[in-house]
Amino acid sequence: MSFLSTLNSRWAATGSLLCVGLDPDPDKFPNSLRNDVGSIARFCIDIIDATAEFVCAFKPQIAYFAAVAAEHQLEQVCHHIRANHPTIPLILDAKRGDIGDTAALYAREAFDRYGAHAVTVSPYLGTDSIEPFLAHSGKGVFVLCRTSNAGSGEFQSQVSHGLPLYQHIASRAASDWATKGEVGLVVGATYPAELKIVRDIVGDMTLLVPGIGAQGGDPHAVITHGSNSVGRGLIVNSSRAILYASSTDHAAGAHAAARAAAATLV
Amino acid sequence: MSFLSTLNSRWAATGSLLCVGLDPDPDKFPNSLRNDVGSIARFCIDIIDATAEFVCAFKPQIAYFAAVAAEHQLEQVCHHIRANHPTIPLILDAKRGDIGDTAALYAREAFDRYGAHAVTVSPYLGTDSIEPFLAHSGKGVFVLCRTSNAGSGEFQSQVSHGLPLYQHIASRAASDWATKGEVGLVVGATYPAELKIVRDIVGDMTLLVPGIGAQGGDPHAVITHGSNSVGRGLIVNSSRAILYASSTDHAAGAHAAARAAAATLV
Image 1 (cartoon, helix red, strand yellow):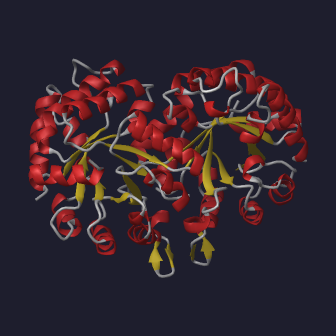
Image 2 (cartoon, chains in turn green, cyan):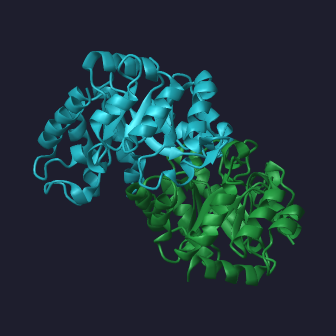
Image 3 (cartoon, rainbow over the protein chains, first blue to last red):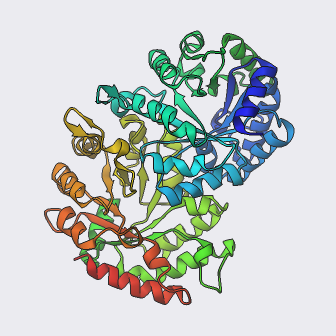
């Protein structure tokens, strides 16, 4: 099944728009695992199994693994999702962006090595840097559009030909990239007005929306401004607010926090 | 010593502006190593030792290692450069770009794990995504400005307030980022007119220039358009044309090709 087919089936089965982001920080692990880099996979797998019933996707952030030489544990985490939760899409958050030959290698990293169903990429180098990802038929490619950080407008909102850059990105996604593969966009929950504008540009395209939870985005505003014509089209990510909901029992804390977060996304 | 101190000493000692890019593709290795993923470090170390006398820097491209789960070999390659060629700056080509907390982890990956003296980063998320790299005192941060690929102008040349985006990036680098750390810019050899414009914006700042060799950029034009007020300020990268100069003896081929390439950069 393609990424979008898997995602649509998952949305239909669960009604959930929640994505749990896997940003494992050993400094924040419960006492039994704390500061143990070797426990990253264990922590993530506990979170996955405790929250699976409430999610439409999982999104590991590769930087948390790469900083501590834990790529092998990321492979274990990805394998666990595919083997034990095969109906849940796996989005690798990598934000890669490079020239063609190199982009093709990053696509291999995401799709072949980690077996991700989708990956996040940066548009700064242009269409020819995105096409090697889109060339992987049936894989999802989420292009950064308007990111959730406080300073995201610095370049993303620079206006040319009457439109800010992020809207040009959205237009290109709808008119060109969508014809070449399963493209989506990343739009932060922290900018609901911009989320509405992007939705109006891209029709029913899937949007990956980080920024609820610890980053402070309003789930209700995300749904109001971001839903597509069938009330879906959103993968709304929360990481820290779920992973570290309990300082003593991470699985139980994540279970309760994911259930609560999913319930706000209706 | 800081990155820029090391680089200035190296320029003074060798007179070379050549950087050898380490893009190890086992499909292109000589017969003795061909298609052996386990030979990546061996191949790179041979290239490093054969070309060191002609270079001002080495630049491993992390995607070539990540695609084949060879991070440990990248660690070996980086260790070899630092241990055996300690006067040569090591630039990790990673083009990372993410929100603050995550950017800080990518900075750890580059500077702590791999021991790089400098790293390439993407500006799409804005200043707050670059600051975690600049916060590593004495490390170099090369921000993508005008990249070497054919389609780089698609977004990088969009004009706002009378200037294309890449010139806004250059202005921000000169006026802000340069006050916070050892910042440089990436400008492709394939766009010599734009290289001249960036040079005029940023004064004597160091520019990392990919695109000579296999990508077809003209070394003479790079020097003419890109040199700073003291005839330096350029790290000019060639990868494939040096790594695969000989299909039988990669070290001897790279030695001759690096000597010839360095001689064109005067």
